[in-house]
Length: 417
Image 1 (spheres, rainbow, N blue to C red):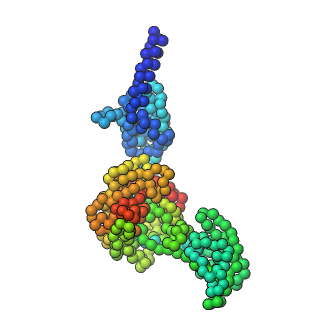
Image 2: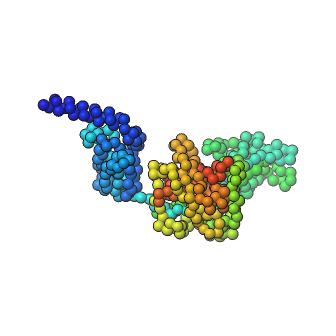
């Protein structure tokens, strides 16, 4: 009797397995990651076959509930996260045969104040950026002879850190061979150069054009009331001539007044023109400039009247194609919310600043700006009541379209500041 029962059970399991193999939900199950990070209190819906059962285990309070739902669209599993903790979700065929176990990590939901405010950025470099070489009259450029190239960052001269062009000149006074520490493409190198006398003023010079500061307009993405950190732009500040990422010496963000808009058109990105140079009180200090944006600490809490209580930050898995909104400032009326659409989500191999493709659909914004313009970089993207990321770049040949970065990427960089 026992052998007959086992054979029947094995046959039933085999039949159920065959049916399951034909189910598209099995593909969804196989695509689940080995580990899922869930925000406290959120509900995650996973498509499953009716033959599957799931049970959760782990820390008390990590999982508030697991519910199987069946409707016209098929079967699904609704997983409700608890307050915090670690757990496991095990999928079983007919409640017996384990097929897949996923590790669960529940974290307190992180709330951010979304930005959208236009900000002015003023920054001095850590070192000086070489933007070109120039002969000193009939004397060949010592910098070029020493192998210095556009984009190199001179950090140190004879053991003295260099923070600006004036300090570089002071370090070269007196002539003689100078030993330079140079940053090139992320690698540190050393070289020797012998400055030459510039006959126009008798000063010793390298024969190089350098830049030690930058200023521009962008958009605030978020303020974290828990840490006081902020993030903006969604992409790096780079030197306009060399494209090199500008190293931060000192930097501040200021409230910026948008005074004019040059609309974008096909082949010609538009621009927000701002006025912040008269501001004396900084909104915050910049301490990091990287491919994901600029980050720092706010001098005072930053507010958004549209979302005074803030919004939760989305994980990448919570972002999907479809309707969304963006927050930005295009005139003196302050932050506005405009319709857009997430057209495509890129795979992990794409640069973080191009993780999403965004289309502006709001008629009022299209009328005012033609789509995305320079200065809107950093405008936060909102979907399903969450901050999902920020606008980063415009598509030159179709300015209603642009790219975006996921908020997860920006928060990871903000934590390092």
